[in-house]
Amino acid sequence: MRPTAPLLLVTVLAAASLTACGGGSGGDPDTVKVAYPRSTDNKVRIMDEYLAMIKKQFEQRHRGKKLQLVPIQASQDDYYTKIQQMMRSPKTAPDVVHEDTFLINSDIKSGYLRPLDDKLAAWKDWARYAETAKSSARAEDGKTYGVPDGTDTRGLWFNKEIFAKAGLPADWQPKTWQEVLDAARTVKRKVPGVIPFNVYTGKGPGEAAVMQGFEMLLYGTGKDPLYDPAAKKWVAGGKGFTDALEFVRTVYGEKLGPEPADALDPNVGTRVSAEWIPGGKLAIALDGNWLPKSWLAKGARPWPQWSKVMGRAAFPTQNGAAPGKVSLSGGWTWSIGAKSTKPDLAWQLIELLQTKENALEWTVRDGQIAVRGDVAADPRYRTSMPGIDFFTGLVEYTHYRPTLPVYPQVSGAIGEAMESVTTGDATAAKAARGYDEQLKSIAGGGNVRDGAR
Image 1 (cartoon, rainbow, N blue to C red):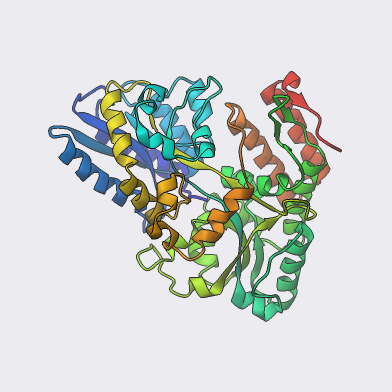
Image 2 (image 1 turned 60 degrees about the horizontal axis):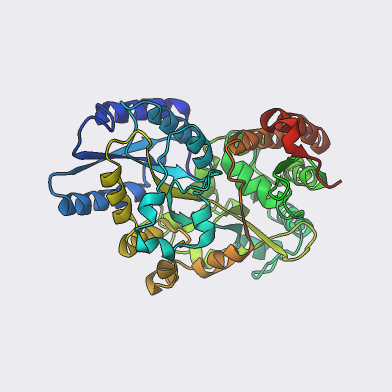
């Protein structure tokens, strides 16, 4: 989960950025503008520093040309909103934009992005990318609109010191959801004062809650539980959907998770990685491979003991059915704005961003899971961080979200259902019925089929 910030912060900083970028992408024929998310944690400047390095390379390679960096310091959801606002007008549209694959299809449908097929056809490095990564930026029209710069996987992080106090094993690997809940209940009983288990939830954390929390559960309940690609229909709340909501309700109803007010805060992800885990206040976290990057010696909050304290386990399927493990993957791409008047120069920037050397540098700096075969095989990547092999191994079990334009709206409806069971305002069955109604409104009744009961 990326750090988040209030909307006011977004407005102020984005306005400052837009003022700084002046007349937009069409203003100066020699300047390429690149919009990207800046962490709301002011100690984290990984992408800023990486792009500063790229800027030097670009301006040395293209004499007389400039690279203008346009950081947008915002929560994920507010970043999405801001870049869409920017891309609507030639006056503010960036030439190159860092796009979350979560959003890319809705931006394609809105006409904000330029297809890259003509560029990719002549770029030999495209053959080095994993097919699943390539498909993450491919639209319903069959064209590709972005070059992925990494992916991620998710699993369980657990504090071995807290587990020892609770009498739980240091090599913990739960086989079912029940075993996850049992471990959390044991921590609650034997180690008071500690949050037993965090699973992101509700509308505030946005897609982090939906993808990283709910869908990690849902995709462990059966095949295609959210969208049926063969029938090309969304799946209305079947038993697996209700069971996943019931799991969330159990975590918060039994006070195994954070206080709801904390859990629903858009900034909860920053508290998890910067405060609760390093402070020994959280026993188990359902989270991503990138967590340790801020704990490294050169990270925002160095924590030398983390690799000894923290254990890792795959998240299990609901009842242990094959393949027994589940993960979700996302990722970001570099895309060219449809309103850019310098697509050739913008593409040269993307090529530079994704040379093998620069792709390796970014993957290691940001704790990404590699999407290029040559980067994945590089010894520097394979030894970049304890646990990188574990999370790379989860790619075998991972799922990707439906790459459809209405997905962001579907995600919003799931977040509402999660929030209602977290606060106790609805049972899992009631929340699932509410989701069904919203889904039919969002996707159209003819595009929805019943799930397995």
